[in-house]
Image 1: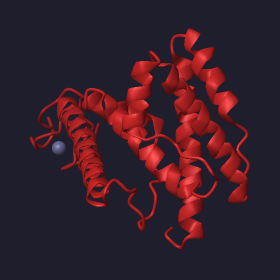
Image 2: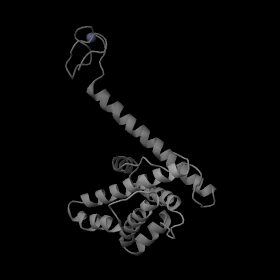
Image 3: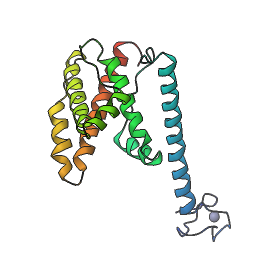
Amino acid sequence: MFCKNCGNEIPEVATTCPNCGAAVDSIADNLKNAAEQTINSAEQEVTNAINDVKDAFNNGGQNYVGGPLKTDRSLLMVILLSIVTCGIYSYYLIYSLASDVNIACAGDGKETAGLIKFLLLSIITCGIYSIYWYYALGDRLHENAMRYGMNFTENGTTVLLWLVIGSLVCGVGALIALHIIIKNTNAICFAYNRANGLA
Ligand SMILES: [Zn+2]
């Protein structure tokens, strides 16, 4: 690396510049800063999530209507936030996906189950319902893509295959299934926002 003060090349482990004596950000400082930034943005996401849930309750349990839908979910962010929040974020994701998809796909005669139904039915069915939930969501996104002039190559069966067969390969299949759901939900939400002048 190079000194910010005099531009002299200095060893990666140096804490002060051997040329001019200026203090240097160490690798540990840089890592600490990067970690702090990740945690700060995670905290912001969780705060937003809590506010969304509060909004939903304030609306008498109805989905919040009016604002633009979230279009920037990413698999990496979901994994990081789930780790930071000890798994709580993955439950928020269920709530958030169901809420947004029910708005963007309203009128198709289907309803994506929200978090409470997801949890109760998953417990009763020893987890089978959670697989069905992802399958049904994948299918619903596929069907509604045409309505917004798009075509998703993946449908519920694709999601199901990755979840069930793909999971035999070290669980990687489940991440691919989740990625498909996140990507297609973002696309549907983006199309909804654009169609309603919210983008
Ligand atoms: Zn220097």
